[in-house]
Image 1 (cartoon, rainbow, N blue to C red):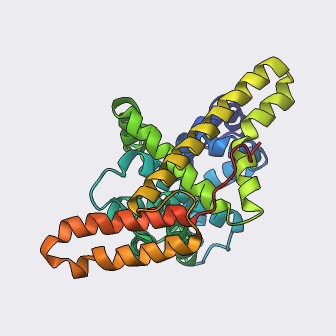
Image 2 (image 1 turned 180 degrees about the horizontal axis):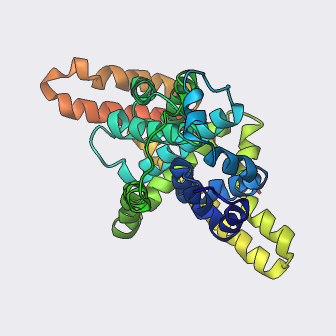
Length: 341
């Protein structure tokens, strides 16, 4: 049955952030992506207003036209590559918050989550990519940054490059019933939101700690780059600024701003606690110089390296990881309180 442009625009306006118009057009991967990101944070939903006619035309192509494009490689798309990077990072952050308690999380869980996020964007529209190669790149990159939340970035980059390298058009398949498609989308949605909901409701304190640690790690990492730090903070404060622009109510806006201020204060206080704990792990007084930190780190690494403590491997490995984590925290520049304002 031919798809109508007016119906598509109506579904876009009513349930666009939930992907209803993509579900109507048979673009299930795009629909799932919008369900999990609320229309790409709203920006993707607004941007595709001008793309809907081409989406409808693509959905109305005949089966023979689809098969004729199977032997060609799709053109390289910078927008798709950036979207793969962003969604891969987003999936990795959600996995960090909800699944980081799992054993071997950084070896299995994190690269799997990031790789699936990249593959989801790669499968949007009439394109797809190689499943094995993309996940393989994610799994091979993960051990290089074991135990570090910042591993999300190189994993997503490696998986996105591989997905672009192996991009291809989708092969034609027979049409499926709506119930089968909804069942598959529902399972995928539950697989994504289920662990996150469980962590939020059943392990709230730990979830808040994971959120603060993840946000703090990324903000600290961005502080190494003069332009990325302010850009990231501006992005996090974007909802407040958009609301103030649209509503212009100083009373409500100031209260809304204070909620974001509380978030930053919470992250800042959590990071300060991590620094104090790091000083204790390295047996240093607060305010130690970088040279003292580096020297103490090298001493403790030699003492607690698992290869030097084969008679107590588990204890040595635990201390070794604590020392590495403490050194990483103290190696990051301390950001002055209130500097994000």
